[in-house]
Image (cartoon, rainbow, N blue to C red; front, side, top):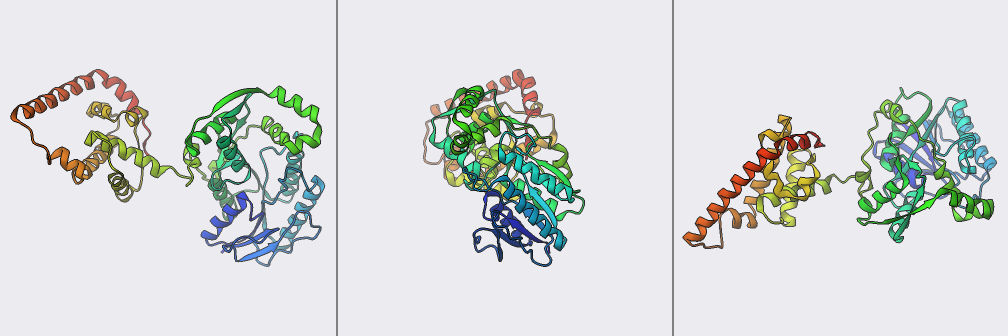
Amino acid sequence: MIKVVITGATGYIGTRLTALATSRGYEVVGASRQRPGSHIASWLHFDLSSNDALVLPDGTDVVVHLAADTAACNLLDDVGELAAAQRLIASAQKVGARFIFVSSQTAHAEAPTLYGRTKWRIEQEVLAVGGWVVRPGQVYGGELRGLYGTLVMAVQKLPLLPEFIPSPKVQPIHLNDLAEGLLRIAERGDAKPGLYCLAAPVPISFSTFLAEIAKSRLRCKRIFLPVPVVVINFFAAVIGSAFRTKLGVERLRSLFDLPVMATTSDLDQLRLVLRPLPAGLHPSGDDRRRRLLREGQVLLTYVLKEQPGSALLRRYVRAIESLREGRVFGLPGVFLNYPILLSLLGKTSWQEGELEAEFIWRLDAATMLSEASPAGAARFLGLGGRHSLLISLLLITNALMGEAFWRLARVIVSPMLRLGMARAKGVS
């Protein structure tokens, strides 16, 4: 059993890391100013502003240092925070524990903020003793806490959002993925000491990140107003350092100065696969069930020619979760928006036989579930409806003409369909 001491255990990242480590069988000791919740069996009082060294319990294998002075008023100066880290490093060395420091993407010797410069100085102390430094990107997901919580609340309340020009770039990482990465460093012997950058390899604009919060987390749209960065910098120079910190302008300056991190090699070394941003922004941290519901709605609508009921949708999702391990079939968006276009799909539409077989299986499953529903019984068996011979002939004629139309259309659009289905996401 790995024994880990986590400073800042009550913080945004610390709370999630503590919960994940506990679920994995770690012996977790929380170190913070206030005692954490009941899920932590052991607790040590730890305050960055205290001059007393933290006495680590015997048998400590790993120390994860998350505690930081993130208050807008910077109650602790850089010297005090650095000294606290030095004392903690010495305590870890005394018991022979590995030391992991969670730093910041803003860390740099010439960072525009005291926060970034302090993180960089602590990094040098950790690296000098053969420790591990982790620079996460823009952490998001989970509870609405920390900077992520601030951004979500801002997007929720403000109808107009700033689109900074030139646009700063961010590299997101979900809270759960970051916690997983930290534990992999803690438990794997082949994770060499040094600097690890954990974030999405491809940066996105900050306005894109905010727009995705509005779309995937809040289910709304926001209007963006162009704001030149030079205006913010001029305002920051006029108001002085004290007001910059108080008004949060220093955080904006850190955002404008964010360096792009090369993360691919570090993610590969830890075998860490990051979840897509839209999925991670879902309140549960995974939108798989929502996508399964969307998939079921499309297939069942195609079969029934009407919107399925919620009970039928739930049965479809349970069937996929039970028989297909909950994997989502990634149909192109045009079919998700217009289910009737599924009539265009035929044997010539697929380049991979496995994908075709999987799609047919799911369509058959939707058909069988529909047949067993009241709506399906009414449609397929004609229950509750009486037709004259003339009406029946007209219905048959209409069905034949419809089939002829779709067969002809399938031939015409077959080349485009093959290209579109080749770009389909398949099963994920």
